[in-house]
Image 1: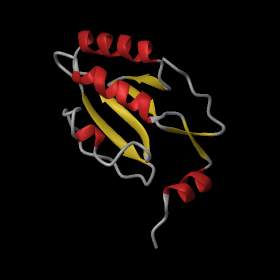
Image 2: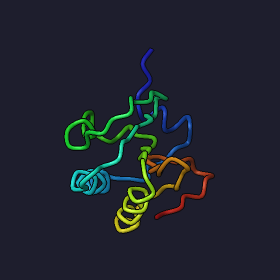
Image 3: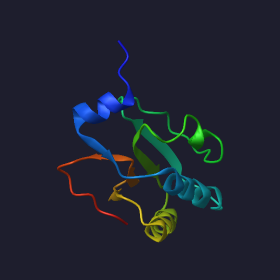
Image 4: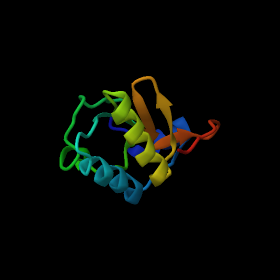
Length: 116
């Protein structure tokens, strides 16, 4: 039996934190970096993508509707700082992690969502 996105959102009581415009802003900013970071997506159904570094085509495959969160994986102090500055300029929901940044596509209704 297939479960659709609306059922997952309802059962898990999740709401959307992002829209296509914000996802495209992230994508555009990362594409324009001299050395873009790697990324990995966790989808609403629990599937995790492989780590990828191609932001122009791969990041947009399948659209953005079912992204639970995006992990941006930085590989140096300089890259981490640059990505942090970019994310704050875009003003995105998420957290800083020990390996980079997590951008929330969906969150549950009881969690406080911080914005960069």
